[in-house]
Image 1: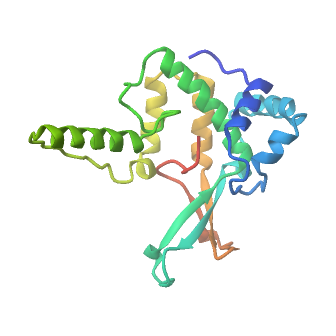
Image 2 (image 1 turned 90 degrees about the vertical axis):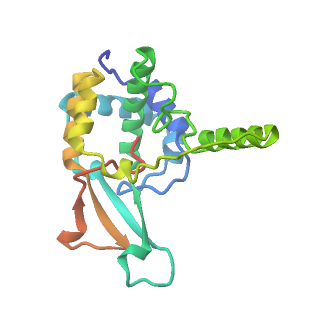
Length: 219
């Protein structure tokens, strides 16, 4: 993979793709403001490049806030909560830029199968199989044919994949070594703070290190 040089145009594109008012993380910043304050784009590009070259980020940007949303009235059972993690907007902007560069490298070298829709930009990983299933079902019904079908569901693969395997995959796909080292450092810092009913749980045990899996929402 070619070395990554982050430009203001990269920042503009990453910010353009992002939703305006998605709930932010610890930085409290919405993408709406990044879209409006265009004078910041050149500064962000320079600072992103410095972080990439130094292979590190302040812990503020690698810490999420996990909001515990109750599924029903039984708030005494931990399994009855849906955890939703919000990441800092600045961190998501930077990883969006890196994700776009990595995707360009993978596509130009035909690394990923065309059938691989999970985590692929512009893909519809759930909708496409459902549409295919619906079309096949109609054809079978119309032609009065027999059909045997099976679905395989990988339970929580996104949440539980090993960090060691993620690092190995980056090597196998020949991702730029500076990007690899930067992402390794970020993985080692990933953590989240629990938030219940709008109140942060500030006790040390509620500052949770992410030892497996990827932040949902991380580009």
